Length: 174
Ligand code: ACO
Image 1 (cartoon, protein in one colour):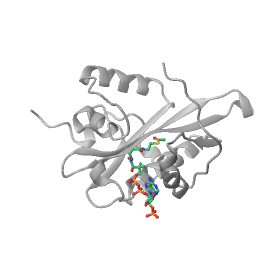
Image 2 (cartoon, rainbow, N blue to C red):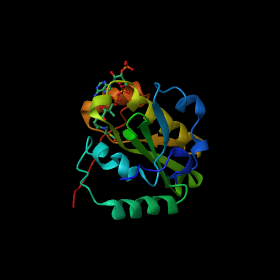
Image 3 (cartoon, rainbow, N blue to C red):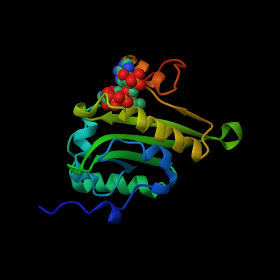
């Protein structure tokens, strides 16, 4: 099986230059932070997300269709990943979703979603780095606030990332 295309020819989910180099340049050697790419199905994206929740293999065609939907909704989805260049596999990911509102003068809100660090790479600062990057992106695109839902067991992690508890989440599953 041929290897996925190198970084220089990847189709990315959003403009990589939006990511402040001051943040992406401070990863440990061999780790590279960039937007999700069209070939990341082959870099164990779904297996990485399974660290967080159910993420069954939907197949490359469905994965690519969802990637293309996100790209088409320009300015809405900012999925980022950390790649381990020695294995060419993803080791961390997270997404910023921008919500367009009528309130507060047609403001934007940033939602941080689907944060996952592969179990062997947890505790090395990658989760915090992903949150720093997504928060910076949210501010760069003009969101007046950035919010997220999390399990109480992760509250201390998000406090270390500069977030505070502002209430509780309610949900109704279909
Ligand atoms: N409780 C308390 N402190 C924590 C926790 C925790 N669960 N996790 C990390 N920390 C602390 C670390 O000790 C570190 O502290 P320090 O700066 O004083 O050294 C700091 O938070 C940063 O830790 P990282 O090493 O960046 O954390 P990591 O890379 O392991 O990522 C994460 C944390 C994302 C929770 C990871 O463990 C993970 O992927 N877990 C499984 C999936 C998950 O629960 N994702 C979050 C879902 S919520 C959402 O998506 C919005």
